[in-house]
Length: 476
DNA sequence: ATGTGC
Image (cartoon, rainbow, N blue to C red; front, side):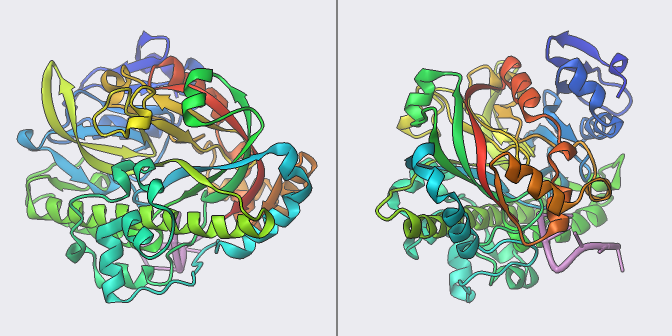
């Protein structure tokens, strides 16, 4: 897009002053290149978000932002319920609480090398992946209720995982305020056989090598050293989150007039935080957060089982689990005043800095780990939260590379088979049930994750700690 | 993202 539409505030901060119906400015964190390459749609969507009732400070876009449904993916917006603030299903996204968790394996790359194929086979065999993938777990009414209200804590009670995992998950593995009675029968039905499955699209399980350390002190606390092998899991709330998003989007679109909300774009459908519909959505959305947390917890258990068949006796410790599609009630300081705000992060990672009260003791000095997944065949990054991120974007950072090309365009440009061969030549093993899926996820269909992370770091959204390179990728 | 599509 045309960068002359912005006032450049500093090296990485680009502002659009309020105009028309905008209540607050819109701010994009990027360098000139990333901004130029961003779709004009991001400008339109972000300025539209800035018109919504009760929005405070600004509508933000992270450096990986791209065109999404209503809100841009890579968007952050906070709303004050006392100012008539709203919650928007499109501001969270369809894959509610999609996120990333990273596990230490205790192995180094030399130890893994002779067993790469065997590990790839074991993981691919053990973890269901792909569109409509089903697992071995089948939920009945009671276990569904337990899952929706208990999240990873419920999964642990069912025997999936270890008690020390919990403190290394946002919300300690269980989202408060989940009201499962607002999750429809259809959403439950879609989920009952999908626990412990990866799904499709950009979801994956990746075995990675730590290739570079940027901050040795923080890396030490995070337990990361060059040539360590880690495993990262990227997935969300599957059919359940999607169904909840679809249903509430429709309800919110229909009720906008009743709540006297003027929508510049129908896709921005929302409801007042204090309205019944807004509260019902929050109750259902928090249940979907628990679904995603339980799903990643079960996949962790399956991963431990698969790894044990190749490396008996190995212990996989959780580094951390972050969600990047959420709306959460948080305390933030706005104009010197402490406020309780509902922060929408859609394709944006929470990035609490040092001393944040919600962080476990182990991360009190460093800030939380911010896990950034790259695209297939490219680097991922571990960052840490900063204190200044609170003032920059309500303690938020980017979530990945961000798409640079549509899925349909990518399938016209690349063939799955060829991509797999090219990656194999670089020593990267891909296992995927869908060749079309591989083509859609071609590395060049994404922005350069290193450029995105560099800007997140320079903008103070989060600080670089370590870079990870893929070794094995199980694609959804 | 998604039992990929109103």
